[in-house]
Image (cartoon, rainbow, N blue to C red; front, side, top):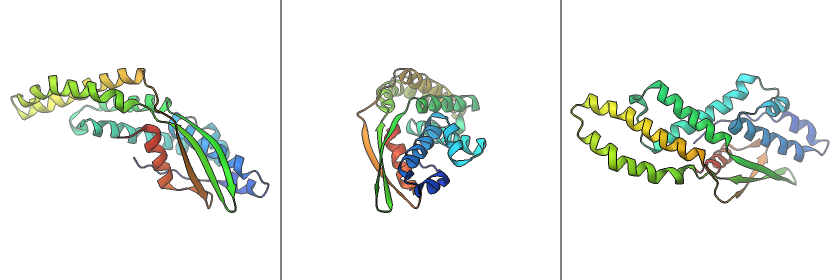
Length: 209
């Protein structure tokens, strides 16, 4: 799941000369994580001067991407379900994001490079859901779908399927847990963390299929 994060490390640039760049980078990376996953962007705004719409945009982009990933993973046909159901999947994604756990453990300086050490706790969301959804799909939905009298009737069943999958997922999120923590390191070069690193952090933290 790719996302674009504007890296405006103005504060870090200013503090580098004073010897506080390591702490500034720690605060900044934490602020980006808080903004992206928890919709807590006060620190991000203080560090970067970003406007509220820009900060909120990082979170909304993540919500949309996770919601889409969930629907694609379970073959939810978004063009055949209601806007209300899509919004419910958005809300589900928000709930998952708020439960994500991460820590910026350390920032190590070596010559012109800063290495950020993160501890990520992947959610077990996908593992919890698969068996229940597979059971529903084969024991109930598939027969209904195959025996639908018309294509229009089959299309209507897509809404029923999406809603039932949502119910299963919501129940699993209520008891969401975590897999073993993962230590991930990334480099800060030219005052930025690469897009590839952000994507990898996303993959690990959300344990995407």
